[in-house]
Image: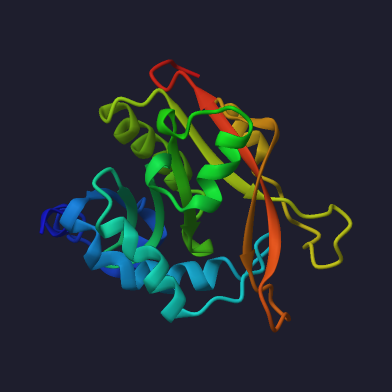
Length: 221
């Protein structure tokens, strides 16, 4: 597969040295390339989303079923971050019109056409590999993919949690400044409701997520 060739280019150094000194290898996967990374992405989502602010008590069985749609979505992309052949991060996206109804319907309800937006879904990265540029690469690659499909608008969701929630880590730093620097802004009055079980919960409960969006993907921020 094509992404294997890209991985081989970064494998000339011992793994220990790569982890300490080299950036992760970023590969954009589309179409039939996506299916091969979905099991590892499912595991990564369960592990990373356990942390604040998602606090997600996930299962691999559910994750693999939920993620399978990307392998059949003609407009989908998975931007994968590898350390050697280990998947350590990934960001996904597809046209909003191909997303589940829970994400499409709120746009229509406030008069925004889902057909005009490319939707950025999960973005997960192992904590040991943060600070190496993967966050910007995840946005760069997905924005480039969206532009190639003819989109000039993109959106994503961020879970809403109370600032005084006792589960919030004292050293937590929100990503709002990073997103704003990328040209994204919260869309007033536009939220998405989605169900998942928090750590400590025995049943799913509805969470609200704030929609962030950017217009003019072809313009510099």
